[in-house]
Image (cartoon, rainbow, N blue to C red; front, side, top):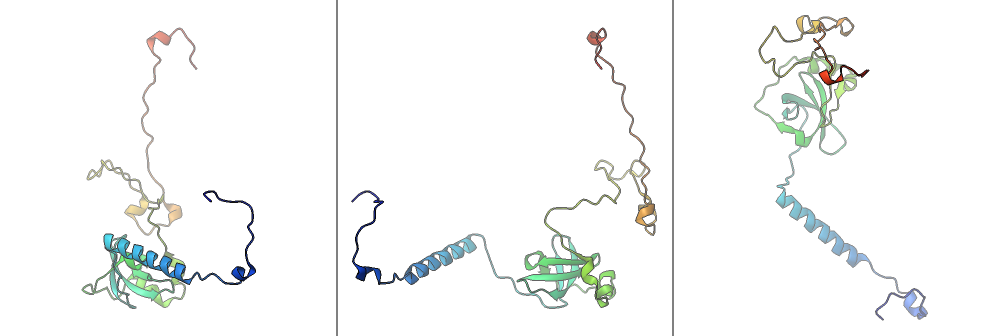
Length: 189
């Protein structure tokens, strides 16, 4: 029979009682999955990273700064890192052990460790950059020209509150738009 039949066929009841063993199929499938994973790992140089310990010094690659491991989370390979700028949650892939680096004894982030509310200051960053509208805009062409740069008052005096920040941005000059000569006889507004 070369066709797929749609009707039911008669079968002996003794054939229906024998359960079908699927263990061999699952073993074969698991072996194939393991083989595929191993081959992928060899091609992409996958390796198991060593786990970090509490208070290890690390280099955080995405924010380019040193920090200390202050907490090992339940999720696999996840850590809370204290840096000069605050607390960050990072995966082991983002952290490079830096045993040669001596972390400063008193830093703003580490001094807050005694407070139980340090998790409210936890920064969880995605790979996408976030825009901060509180900072003064900088134009890439104004590399070293101080007379053309736009500064906010917070750059001059960092002790000002955010509510007092204001920009002294002048309005850009606009050019005079003239109608073409051949449209002088027509109303174009």
